[in-house]
Length: 182
Image (tube, rainbow, N blue to C red; front, side):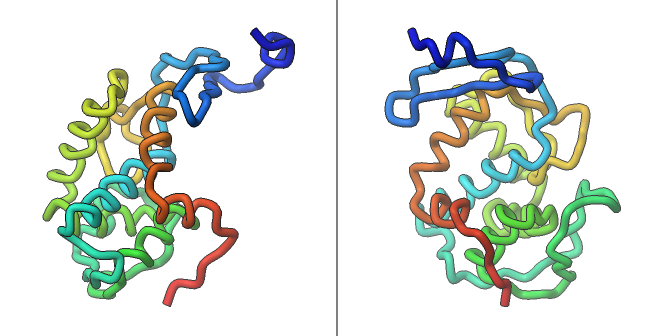
């Protein structure tokens, strides 16, 4: 019980406050209601990329080439880092592009680097979500551009973010104020 939490009013459709150390839910408001996650999706893309690095399948210095699939599932008004087909970038730079300017195409490039194809990566996203206990989540793409079959909950997002925060590289990127892509 907390007077602050009991009196707290959150102006949002859904919200959750979780103790980062214990995972204890301190406050929730519609935390299990399905919503469209938009760019918070990129946390899962970064998490899966960093787990591939941990397994030795990639390094942060691995250079990958943007294929013709870089715009898969992305509309004209999407956020971008203006990465072009054929452009070569390191995994670390793609992670920064994914998490800071929210570059949708960077997500697809990472998806191919991790899984060989965007579709295979999206399957991996759903598999990892299930492993994390994200019971009300389904991914349809690697970047979060709107798709009616792409949804999650505030509670599931908390599980995903808590896992991502276990990675020092993730914490470094998301606490950065800016980054200059080479």
